[in-house]
Length: 134
Image (tube, rainbow, N blue to C red; front, side, top):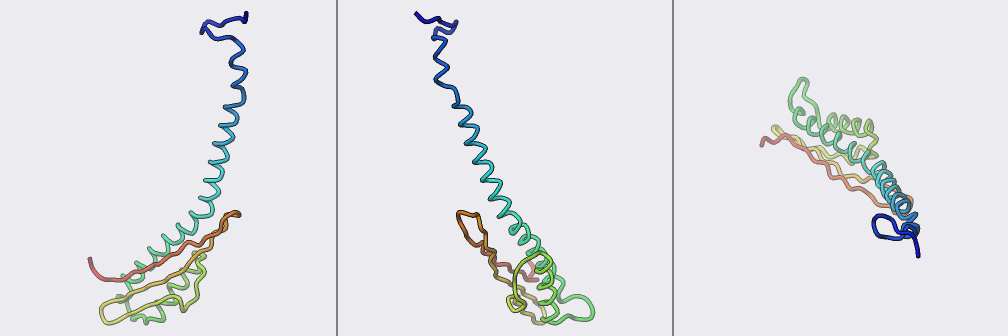
């Protein structure tokens, strides 16, 4: 007869459960590592887009103020320069600026390719700003 522990189970019953927690820990580490890898690839373009959107909103708000008055080309060049600073790969002709006497509208559509080694996709961004009041 096998020796019995205080719990009423044979002492050898835990031997069959060995390694289960190690396998679970390995599974959790792999999942967390994959999530961190995806975050390292996706978060920087998202953050750059957030900064760029803030920049074009400020640019559109103050486009018609100041002296001397700036032209559409001046604003387009400023927006393009900011995109280059943030590492956003666009061409100057991708930046669309529409101005009249009271409004300024800036828009830009671009995509950022993301390579996750096993899956590739593109983040699509459609930035738009104008100086219309709420």
